[in-house]
Image 1 (cartoon, rainbow, N blue to C red):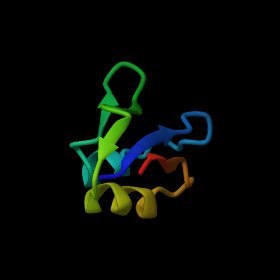
Image 2: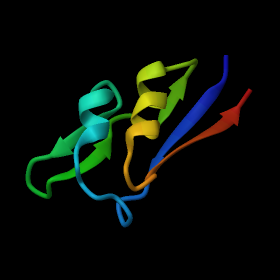
Image 3: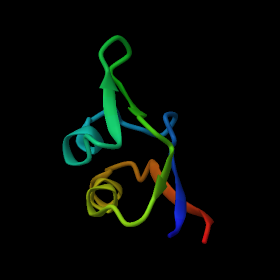
Image 4: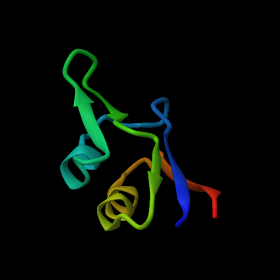
Length: 69
């Protein structure tokens, strides 16, 4: 099973919260800074909600990298 790393570029992020809405298993909004954060950066297998969050991100701030096959 593939291991992947979720990266979120908080500099380019527009803080819209789409990622946390689409993929709450992977992202949450920090109430103090109103910035999303990745809950667990290392995942295994396929996650359709994560792919959707990446597709919906208006600033293209989400990257998913394969780190182990």
